[in-house]
Amino acid sequence: MQTRPFGKTGESFPILSFGGQRIVDEHNCTEEEAIAIVNTAIDRGIRYFDTAWIYSEGQAETRLGKVVKHRRSEMWIATKTSDTTRDGARRQLEGSLIRLQTDYVDEWRLHNVWDHARLDAFTGKDGALEAAVQAREEGLVRHISISGHSDPQVLVEALNRFPFDSALIALSALDHFILSFAEEFLPIANARGVATIGMKVLGLGSLTHDVERSLRYSFGLPISTVIVGMETMVQLEQNLAIAESFTPMTDAERLAFFKDIIHLVRPEKMPWKATDWENPSEWIP
Ligand SMILES: NC(=O)c1ccc[n+]([C@@H]2O[C@H](COP(=O)([O-])OP(=O)(O)OC[C@H]3O[C@@H](n4cnc5c(N)ncnc54)[C@H](OP(=O)(O)O)[C@@H]3O)[C@@H](O)[C@H]2O)c1
Image (tube, helix red, strand yellow):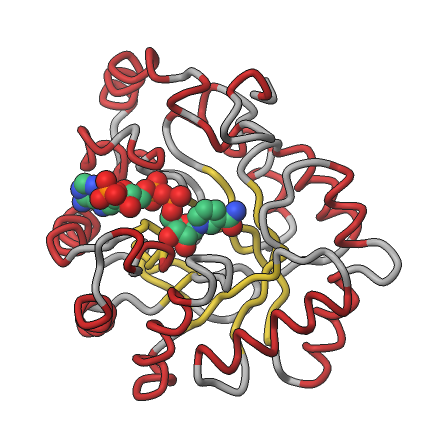
């Protein structure tokens, strides 16, 4: 699998990485299956694992931790705080470290920064960013990150406020057309050496009828790596096969793909662009 540098960290990762949200009962994945999928992912070359305590209230982290315990040196672990306050975020980090069975995480993210008010809360006085800086000084966290899938300008503003090491952003082909992180965020992040991780590449299910072209589109962007949420061995094998044989789309292939999916660029197919996922009328565009 092709590998790429991860910002200024000195690390490089394969283009396919592991989204750890779905290795839980809620997605019909047993603990035994979850452990087998994560072990196979590592055996096949995947190194980067994304998770968060809010994924099934700790179950996703707990299951990942059962592999981390045995294979820590082979894994890059990114987890998150959804609590915007310094003290609340610190408590989340301490819980994550216990569930993940490790003394430190490689990356800790400010989770889902959808608007300027949430960014202010994270980065303001007594906000979670203060906890992140302190945790980095203590060696509990190696790199500080941010994530967002709604509005690229909020994350551009975040980079102006703090030298984040990385950003996890929505980079599906559907995102190309609306509040585009590819157009508005990637050029700025790349110029500053900020590592970039793509998500929503299968559109949370909206693009699973065309996995190969969806992954090829996202792998072809100027990004560090792509996380895909995988909850079965079949999905892992299919995504690995596409990543291992990756060649960039030609302009003609990309245009043909866009023509086939543009009808999906609408609120009910892209709920991550809404401030309220249950209410498409709150769609930001
Ligand atoms: N703000 C944030 O920081 C944030 C928010 C959400 C998620 N995340 C992270 O991002 C990761 C990826 O999640 P996402 O939201 O971006 O979703 P996604 O990767 O666009 O979609 C994941 C879904 O695609 C389906 N899938 C995966 N491989 C497949 C294959 N080969 N064939 C058919 N279907 C396949 C599975 O759905 P089925 O259920 O249909 O099998 C899977 O649950 C998560 O695991 C999590 O780690 C971060």
